Image (cartoon, rainbow, N blue to C red; front, top):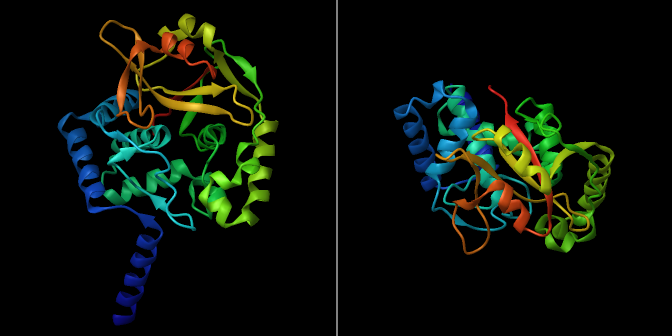
Length: 282
């Protein structure tokens, strides 16, 4: 019996060592699940759940590079600050847990790992879905989301990503572990072979009424070597227009855009259009 207890303690320690979070994160997580129970969110469409959870984080500070913690890859949970991607992942992970009636902190940890990593498992830095186009591909393959851009009248798009392998000094783990760069290069080649679909920015106004509350929005880039500039969550306003809920940039907080999505994308010169993703009901 003592040996089994000792092994259990070792197992729990190993799990915790592979993750980074604070007591505050646990408190916030439990509060979100309590909010969901009070609002009976489990009976709502998953897009609406995503939107409600996202709105509950409005006012949270933006912080860049929140996942870059040390030389080895660990599951980082930080619910006190966000970048644009961690905000989107957080909303989606909570919504899936709520719909599946799995509402412990451990459930949230497992769901976040499933969404954030290739095939749902951490295996060193390259297992993180660093390019959002790769995030789309992998999470569509897992049945978590669907790229509905083609259905909305989208056009084919082939990326030419290379930014990470050409600028490894900008990424802590690549700088510390240059042996990982060839792995990243192979991932970039895989991305560049795929066909995606997107809505050119000039046509977003035409299809905006077909975007649902809680759809996930990725902004395609004209920056050399990059795929996606920014991501956020679509929210339907009282007047029927669709706006963007997002963690905008350093110095800003999670907010809903003043402009409708169709006008917002036109204002950002480096954005070429959007990819619209719809979460699947678990």
